[in-house]
Image (cartoon, rainbow, N blue to C red; front, side, top):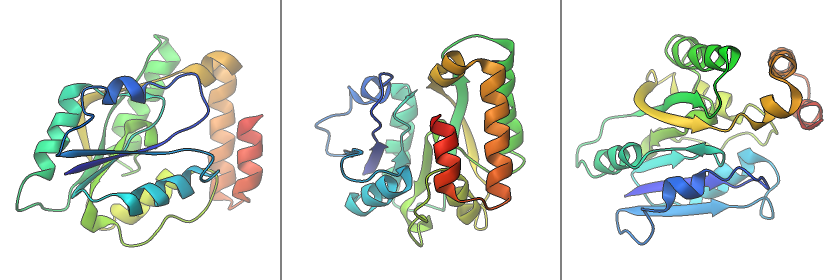
Length: 206
């Protein structure tokens, strides 16, 4: 079974619904939605979703990303193999708007962050073999996907699948592409400096 876990946000861009519309009521797929009413931080929602799941393959589906049927079907096939080796990674990132800086961000995310550094962000839609999960995510407000990647890459490097994870660029369009890029960089610096995640999240929300 493939377990698809969506940490649902209160947001207009709910692309995940389109991803999953052809996979309801299937015995080889379970879809678990964890809403903000149950837990505020995304890390908490991912923890809750994992412990509710039963599948051999887990997919953490970003609520504002869209996957093709072929992408999900590939993971279903992988989950049905009797002899599964450790397996984790993400899909190829792409924004739903065309802009030279957005294309650069996706390129960097795919080929530098994932393939070189071994860090897979949630908007790639992270998948992994159940056996890789050894402990819950730390309850922090940002960068829980970085924490997860750091745990997994100690065991095996991530795989970048060619299927596209088409992600909403709404934050970049709302705040300005360059301004959002600078903000993201400052947040990463704050994370490396171990500033409180609640402070970083407050800045991110503003």
